[in-house]
Amino acid sequence: MIKQDDSIKKILRGKSFKFGDDISTDLIAPGRYFHLRSNLSELAKHVLEDADEEFAGKVNNGDFIVAGRNFGLGSSREHAPTIIKLAGVGAVLAKSFARIFFRNSINIGLPVLVCDTDKIDKDDELEIDLSKGIIKDLTKNIELKFKALPDVMIKLLNDGGLVEHITKNKGFNL
Amino acid sequence: MDKTISEKIISEHAGRDVFAGDIAVVDVDVVMAQDGTGPLAVSQLKKMGFDKVRNPSKSIFFIDHAAPSPRKELSNSHIVLRQYAENCGMVLSNVGEGVCHQILVEDFAAPGEIVIGADSHTCTSGALGAFATGMGSTDIAVGFALAKTWLMVPQTIKVNFNNNPLKGVYAKDLIIYLIGKITAEGATYKALEFSGSFIKNMTIDDRFTISNMAVEAGAKAGIFASDEITEKFLESQGRGKQYKEISADKNANYEQIIDINCSEIEPMISMPHTVDNVCPISQMEKVKVDQVLIGTCTNGRLSDLKIASDILKGKKVNKNTRLIIVPASKKVYIEAIKEGIIQTLVESGAAIQSPGCGPCVGVHQGILGDGEVCLSTQNRNFKGRMGNPDSFIYLSSPATAAYSAIKGYIADVREIL
Ligand code: SF4
Image (tube, rainbow over the protein chains, first blue to last red):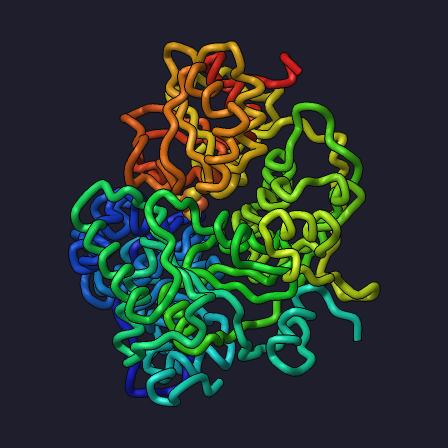
């Protein structure tokens, strides 16, 4: 659950884009676009290209990535969550996340939620209440709960990310 | 209360006793980023208003992923890193010096330290008894600025490698076997601590290979206790003074203990497109290989190149296969030249590249064509990893890779041992 705050939107609404297990950071931000890492808006046009060629063209502001196990495994490239966020994705839902990806996402203020994504289908309309920890699948008319984040991460998210946390507190205040 | 190695190191750096599940802000000893992650760290540093780093002599930028640079955008990123390093008095490891993780173990990391790096394979330094872990650019920017980070103390899985492996089976086969057994997320958020009766016979290079791939099981760290082998290695690098004994307490709490009988393992292959998609060599179908890569932070060390050259001596690389060799560092390269290893490899038909990541991450120097197959000694085989999502990457030990380069297909090196 994420506590109420101004820096992140509490209620998110959008459409589901489904992905399978083991979506690596190589699939999210392919190495062949290494040279675009200094041009993130350009790199964002290729987000998840090797997992679903059409995703970048179709995703609308606020939509969700809904994936299987171990989302974001592999390289530490923070460009992966960053371009997901830049592409407009409101949150990533998965059965589980790889460690570095999860931490990077919180640091940059991208909500990453662990829940039973088998219950959600492609194109389902979702409404997520970050403060209550509830995902409503409006298409199916069901409610899912997502796992609470550790307190430190809530603190970081509430500050707007790690850069903002450090700037505000002149160091760590966790 | 007794502690695991991770709990010990983190407690010491937090200034209080902490155990698995606790969260602590800790001092860090070594902080690094590479040319793929460094530029973003620089922009985050600037955003936070830092124009200095806390501990410049232990803050490093490595130019290794796209080195020498294949295009101007990357050359410009390199300029950003060189300038920032220069302004802050940081260490810059330039084109040709080698892969970050190899240089970290040669020149920087030491037992009992905390090492953080904006590269997932930072866990390699765990082989020296350091708590070493990969993070993203923003965490590392803060690490540069403050020489601090926050950590959740991980639970630890103890892995006992018991008994010596048979001929033809190497550290790489053991770690691939382990990842196949526990899966690519078997150790997520946890530390792996390596132990068992084979440990005392393992070379330091073997340990680097094993720690390097801990992250392929999702692990936060892959740690060995330090011992005479660690000490000898540090002495050989002129850093004997940095040796310190570190090991787990007798009654430390492990989340799980995994026993592996190394003598029952055969050469292993990770098949496309995940590292945990493993297959023992005896069960492999015949897979033709277009390219073989021996190198990277996993297996580009002197002993790896030596194994390859012993197999390739007096033989030729198959006419349908190309062999690329990338020494992991300048030190490795020079030694390999002195020992005649490089000459043997070149005579056999190998293309040698300057120390660095080489083709591992799909930026340059060996990008695969459509439908092509590469057998590589690297640590990852994700779809698209080597620059082309329509190609196929298999992973193996340097011995399997060298022998397969001669045969032209993935072959069982035990046939000639
Ligand atoms: S050699 Fe490969 S795995 Fe190692 S640091 Fe370089 S790109 Fe990463």
